Image 1: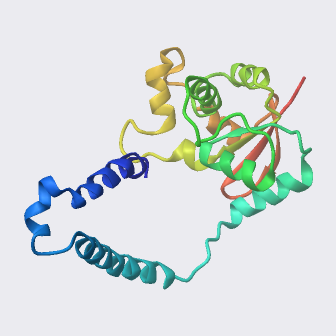
Image 2: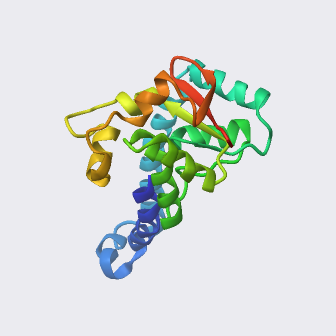
Length: 207
């Protein structure tokens, strides 16, 4: 999508060359420029209408019940100024649907956001819970949304989150991933306040 947006101005410039007498003057001796442009637009419109009709024919409704349960619980049981952290796609939903402050999201890219996201994703590393909690508190996080799939997913050897963290954090390599420990028992550094088959909300305790 970014490439499409980036190349759109170039496409417009190239399209304007259709009316160039230097390039296509030999055609204009036989066909009027306006006629040529209208013919091209008509062909484009024919294909465009076909694409629109194809898209309009798709009838359905997106459903993600575990995430709906998560968002409804957040709206009903947390303060409007409660700060959340978690996987970037989920944070976008929390911000949009639950209207809660978040510390990382997928919409913009800058060095500060990458640094915050790295701290947030340390929950899927093998670091001690106390260390991760300390960094989350520095960012003002009240709740952490833990997703089992991010801890267990392994598309191929070496590509799970804990394995990726082993390259970054050699000191703790080989230990049990923190996310596994949090799934079993989040105490004493966190407190589990919500749980379904996909998401677990951990409250970052202040003690």
